[in-house]
Length: 264
Length: 295
Image (cartoon, each protein chain N blue to C red):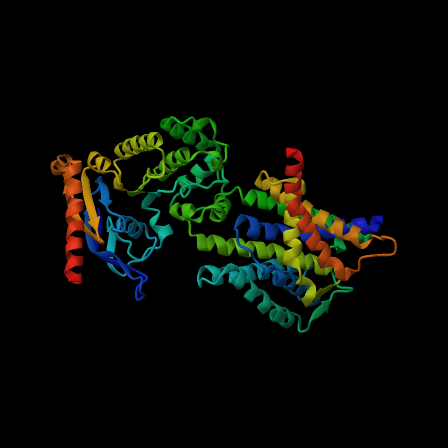
């Protein structure tokens, strides 16, 4: 359903800081796939998700979703198909708007925004029902400004807003990394519920090997802008944290070997 | 201060209040410091004056002025969004370009409107004295604009405008083209500023290319004084506070100019100094209040 074909992206191209962030990467994602994405810092995990979301345009390669070629689409246009939750809980919501205003903004994701009233009376019921599902008591605080909420509450709200209108693709960029362990656990189970309930095609970046194995039906590991490991189904559920760590050290060892070869 | 000076200040406060709503929209809501207003205020005045002297209905001339102002704001916003010029610089470029354009429109540095038709004529024809007629017209128009802006910011589009200034990444992820929002928002702001300029020109009987100097400072002063004195806990309150802030600002200036301290009086050339002191006072007043309450 998503096809990433020979995608390459350089940052600061032509300068001394040139970085090859995506190196001729290719990925086929089937509808309903829940893929966990792992890799060390700078491996290209976020870059891959940002490339899908359209934060920048690729140097080469194509991206298609369904039968739409979105390679040249600007970020706001891709939002019709793609919803995102960022690592920073502050990025997904508007602090000076109320909870219901934020949800009303999300309810119109990818639709035309006209001069109809922003928060319709009939929508409040829907918002309250949805908020009740996450069990944080936010359903009684529709008129509160989001700036008053904690990071965890804001991230839960962002998660809800991302899926209020069913997206074709859900991108989760380390969306629990900035939360305390208890809240992170809550957001993670909320994620599992929503993804299962709506059967969402999902890519989730995580630094937690246990989560990477436990969640989803497929796992990819990135290294230097390439996919170096892609396992799914039983092979994935049979993986252990040690297997993944072994993979990690193996590629890093090769890197060291290459470096020492260059130096000698 | 005489009653005439007070009415004059109230009148000025209300008509400039329309401009202040425009400044509030860019400065506070879109977080887009926009100096275009120093050019779009006289642009509105020039368009309206030339339209009226060419025989156009004064009310229609207001519409033309607003459209002209929108275009000026849109130019600034396009320079910023599409060509990545810093918003402050983009607005200064439009502002200085407008200086020449305004002289082109008027065919000279000013256009007199003495004896021409104005928007106040229907009321004056009813026997209302001119200074009260203009006060009535300005009150009505600023009320309509305040109400219109409060309504607009509650609409789906208006909510997207608020979100653009608040968290651009969030609203892009919700599928909004923020470039379009900024172009419409800055355009709308300058349409209001030009409308204000057109009304001022009709009131003072002339449009002048220099009448826009200091518009942004007066606008910011009014917004800040309004927030300090009347609060900004909601959008509706902040918009009403902006207009009331404009009235307080004009009253304070009238008061200062009428002051006689044992032979010392302020002259109109001290206006900028008074404005600066007023803004500083409004900015530090909340801090002083907090400290006093803490003791």
